[in-house]
Length: 168
Image (cartoon, rainbow, N blue to C red; front, side, top):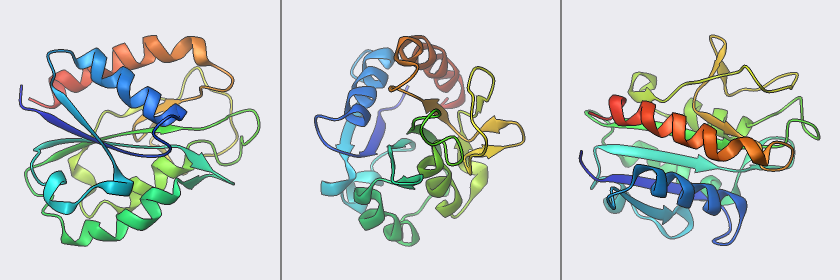
């Protein structure tokens, strides 16, 4: 399998960085290289055919501010021939009306939605609304480290197994 570029928005010591590390470990064999979008460039992103984008939710479902600064660069990126998987963190109890909306915003900004892989079932979550929900699935892996941290490792393992097939 080709190397995977994982780009996340968030504090280097925060939950999103922790989940990014768990995803890297689940792939094994040094397949994943992690970047914080606060310091990433278009050239670094374009080194990879397989990409993973991750964000936490800020405020009422906004993507992390690091993504706010980077996402406009999507217009410069050649996405043709690439596959993109998404993961988003959120709190479904405190923010049930905007659960993992940051992930939904990144998905909406992809110039070609057909390159998105790694859709995840909505079962097992309790929320009212999410812009990251499409056709009864999330557009990527939804993580709630605040109210369901015990489910994170298993969800990551299952999602990575799915991505290993989809990234081929």
